[in-house]
Image 1 (cartoon, rainbow, N blue to C red):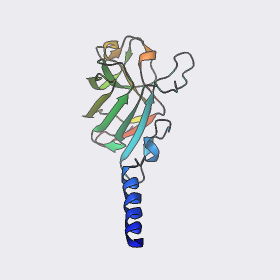
Image 2 (cartoon, rainbow, N blue to C red):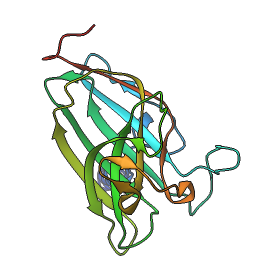
Image 3 (cartoon, rainbow, N blue to C red):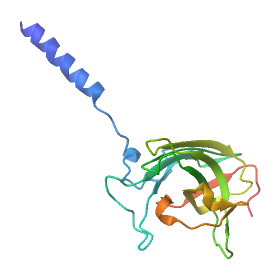
Length: 177
């Protein structure tokens, strides 16, 4: 009986460990982590819905947010982005927003475009030849209709996701100044 009880407890503990989700430090949307992971070439960036009046993150159960995995260096900027809590069935563009902006409409580089599903989730990925390094720059998810001729010509910030941290990327086949 003791052996049966020991086996049952072991099985129960193993089953509970296998069914319990293990979250890495960067998987919590409240965590603002970006940058490299150990010695790898991968980094993560969180994008959040922000209050346009204060630019503070709009924390809450219905907050829209996203997570982008990207390479820190390479011949192409490779990325994977997943967004949540967005408007359902809406076209979005993931953009690189170069600073400083001195003209309107603001020139941007569109990294990817896609439509959110019925639940307000979106998945975008790509491999883009930027032909330049990024040095503390911005990545935003914006309404696709606000992009005209590679420029942000509409302004609906309550519908966008903004970077929590700036990103850097080394384009290894472009000479840096």
